[in-house]
Length: 425
Image (cartoon, rainbow, N blue to C red; front, side, top):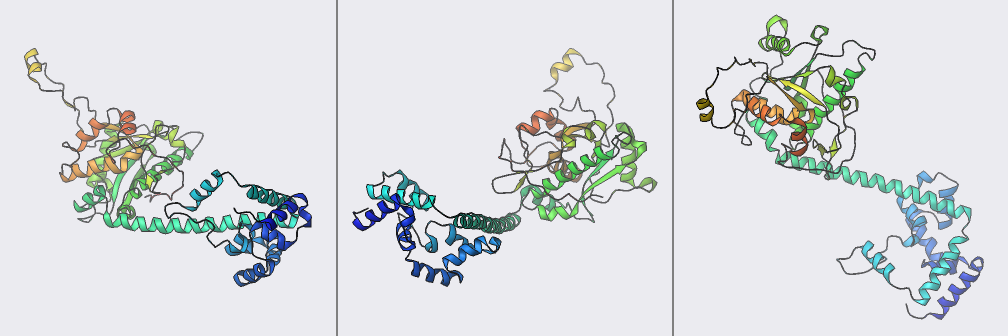
C-alpha cells in the first residue's frame, strides 16, 4: 500500500478519537462509497437508504429482509458486496486469496487502518449491533434455504441419472421376470412366534416392525433402480397367538399350506416361496431391534445399507420350508473318508440361516429368487440355500467384513436422516 498522508492522518485520528469521525470519513476508512453515493446505490438496490435498512433490521420485522438487504448490512463491503473484492489467478478462489492476504505482513499504513477500524467497531451503537446481528442471521437463513434447494435439485438430477443407468442387481431380477407372470409383488413372509403376552404388550413387536420395514425400504431405495421395485415391495406378516414358540416344523407346515392355497390361506403371487423369516422372542426383544433403524448416507447423499463396526444389528432367522433332515449316514470306512475330496459344505445345514436384516431384502432375496427361477448368479457358482448357508455360517463376521453389494469392505461416514416406512400388509 503506497504512502497516503491524508489517509494516514485520518486513520490516526480515528484510532485516537473514533467519535469525532463523520460518516463520510468512516466510509473512507471502511472502503465504502461516499454517503450520498452509498445511499443512491442502496436505494437503487433495495428501495431504502442505509439508515432505512438499519431501521428495518431493528424496529421492523428482520425476517422480511431480503438477501441483498442483509448482505449490505453485514458484508464488509456494504452496498458494494457484489463487487469482486479480491483479484488473483483463475486457479485461486476467494478463500485462498484471503488466506494469502492474511499471511502477508501488513504494512504500517494497513496496521493503522486496522486499528482505526477496530476503534470504530468498538463504538457502534446498540442499534447498529442489533441490525448487524439480525442481518447476519437473516442472510444465513436465506443462504441455507438456497443451499438446500440447490442440493435437492442436484439429488433429483442424480436420482434421474442413476435410474436411467440402472443397477445390475435390480435390472437382472427384472429382466429375469421378477414382476412378470402375474406377480403382484415381491418380498417375504414373516412369522411372528413371540411376545404375544407380556407386560409391555405390543410395544416390542411394533418397534421391530418399524425397524424391519425401514430396513426393507432402505434396501430398495439404496439402489439406482429402486423406484421400480419400491411400489411392489411387500412384507407379508403372519401374526397368530397359536404360533407362539412354534417350531420350524410347525411353521413349515403352515407356510406350505399358504403356498399351496390350502385352508383358505394363500400367498400373494411374487412373495418368495422357498424361504420365510421368523421373528421369535429373542429377535423381537433384542437390544438392536428396540432402537429405531436409521440408514446411513454416503457422500453422494444416497441411503446406504452398509454396516459400520459400531452399528448394532438385528439378526433374523431365515428358514427353508422344504428342508428335510437327512437320514443318519452309514458308517464310512477309513478308505471312504480318504477318497472324499474336500468337506461337504452342507453337512451342518439345519434348514435355517441367521441373516442380518440389512442383507435380507437384497442379497437373501436375490439368492432365493434366482433359486426359484433356476438361475445361477454370476456372483456365485452355487445357488439357493447352498449360497445362503455357506455365507452365513458366521453372520457377524460375514456381514461386517464383506458387503455382498459392493464386493469389498466399505466403511462410510454416516449421517442420520429419517425415511418413510415401507408398505406393510
